[in-house]
Amino acid sequence: MEENRLYEIVTPLLYWYQANARVLPWRSDPTPYHVWISEIMLQQTRVEAVISYYERFLSCLPDVASLAAVDDDLLMKLWEGLGYYSRARNLKKAANVVTAHYDGVLPSSVGELLSLPGIGPYTAGAIASIAYNLPEPAVDGNVIRVLTRLLADSTPTSDPALVRSLSAQLRPLYPPEQCRAFTQALMEIGAVVCIPNGAPHCDRCPVAFACRAFANGNPASYPVKAAKKPRKIVPRTVLLLRCGDRLAIRRREEKGLLHGLWELPAMEGYASEDAVGSYLASLGISAASVVPFVEAKHVFTHLEWHMHSFEIAISTPSDRFVWASPAELRTLYALPSAFRAFLE
Ligand code: SF4
Image 1 (cartoon, rainbow, N blue to C red):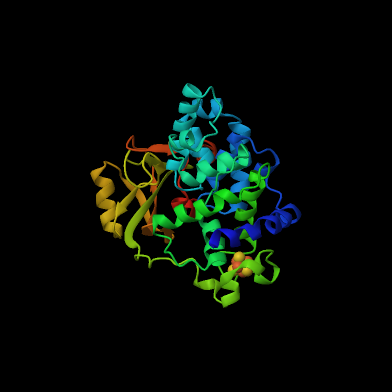
Image 2 (image 1 turned 90 degrees about the vertical axis):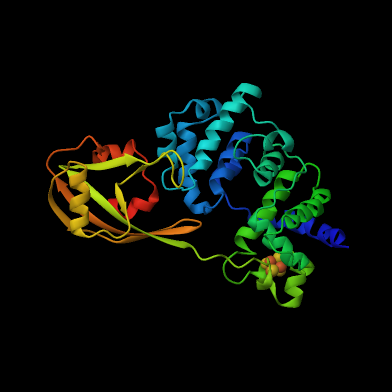
């Protein structure tokens, strides 16, 4: 029975974790708030990249109350570069619910956690088990990879039955008093031993003795993923409008991709120098010079922006845009990393 075989991994995994756990800032003081913020940041983002964001975020917003009250522009600035900005917006929304209904402390039950904006089954399980030490599985991509290899389970990752089945098999394994360590041990082994890209380190895996994929010599066959659709390519022309040392920025619409964030002005498609001149004239802007600038590409989940750009000198700032100084771009306005190549 699968369940019995997974029982064998619990003790070796816990010993291994005790000896090998990486020192990470959110592990030293796993309060519900700390676990919540770190888990939301870690979605789609590497641990190494998250550490500095996490520390900066907590130094500005140390608790639920400060997050609930934060100014939106500061929140976006703290999130700048992490991507998937709706995560930050949902954090603030959820902090307001926690302030209003839970006296500023995240609830411990998975059902109540799931009712908060931006918290799905994985994050709810992570908060319940890591912060509250409850026997609640948290099945993310790392854990799916480890378990499908251990079990040689070829259910596709796109099938919701997979997470349900893995969660059901994990739940009875949780050792009382060590729920926190067990969840983190599963995540950790997926992050550093049974790794996502490249061959897993089966030679130093503490649960290799129980691994069916290892025995069969085919760990790379798991997890089974559906073929991805190719991303849509979207050509754009980015305009770096400079007036002295100030740069023109504008806010994106309140819906759609990167909604509500600041951006460099842009035109759809690859525009010629003449087309850029006509566009600026239509805005009542006369340019002293229009010079081709760098090209860049930014990959989103479902599409790619392929960007050409022009650097444009303006003598009189137009009120069509906000004219940001270098200091304001550093400290006040959050521009998505899609524009990083132009600002560097
Ligand atoms: Fe992953 Fe290899 Fe360990 Fe199996 S033996 S869980 S494939 S690292």
